[in-house]
Length: 110
Length: 115
Image 1 (cartoon, rainbow over the protein chains, first blue to last red):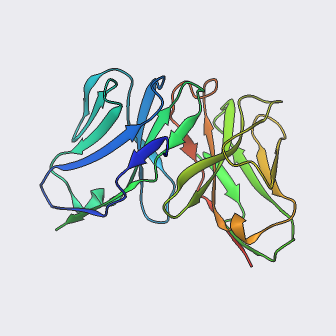
Image 2: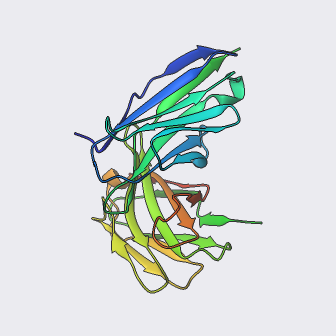
């Protein structure tokens, strides 16, 4: 079992819709959770991080964390074609190293 | 503002050849990392350096060596390249101690092909 699991997709949503990206992790001692966005052929860039259970909002992005269920998600509201990218979930586990999921490829259709 | 700079951006090697990937950051960051990214595998940590003078193995260190030359520079060496090392390599850095914030700043990547 991989330590950080993501649905690889591809996930397609129409422009203006809500995109929902999910991630589960196996290390119950994990403390910090991150979402990186990676455009094709480019390097990853951080878009959200969350440490506490609940929701964290930043513009059109909302990160949700449920430590009891070992589940973290990213919602993108009013999706735009420019949001088309691969989204990487990263988890800082009890060993303090950052472990990445394999990523979910999102396509926003005009 | 250069951020994290990696060289070379592209390299083709033959099996058994050696090469060094160079990485330099100008953000005065303490910690530096080398990842590889393969299709369907996400980013996997090869080696990291929590601070100048220290290096540690990550998830997939076999076949690689690293040198933290100074606070700015962290190099990755392949002593005898194998086709399994064909990948995109990313160098990254972070400001605080090892993974305090999680905000990694990545270089543009180095695409390596081993024939």
